[in-house]
Every structure is written in structure tokens, then in C-alpha cells.
Length: 69
Image (cartoon, rainbow, N blue to C red):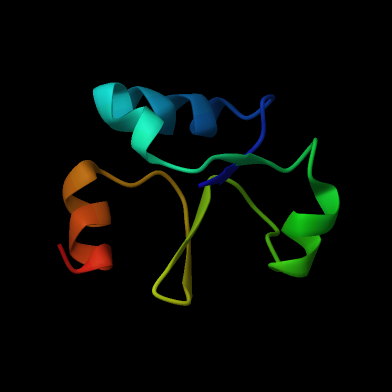
């Protein structure tokens, strides 16, 4: 997940992930601007799943479906 520590939607997403949060790689775009720029991240939270970019807060079910689980 691409996020920002100042983003309220990112905090909401982290709450949704709950006990599964540690299973996700979270990149803070304030601390990793070059990586986020390279991935063309313009808004957070953002996800890159199976080489597709998705923006916005997602439910666990949505993430599961996007990942093909």
C-alpha cells in the first residue's frame, strides 16, 4: 500500500486491515517520494496489485478479489 502518514484515508485503510496490517508492505510517500514518483502514485492510499494501480480505501474483500485470492 502506498500511503502518507498525514492522510486520514490511509489511517482508515490501516484500521480496515487491522490484524492483517503486518502482512502488507506499506510505503510512506512522504518518506519515499522517489519510489512513489516512479510508480506514478498521485493519490493515496494506492495499491499496485498484479501490475494494476488502484486508488482509494478498499475493503478486505475488495483487496482479496483484486489479488485473485
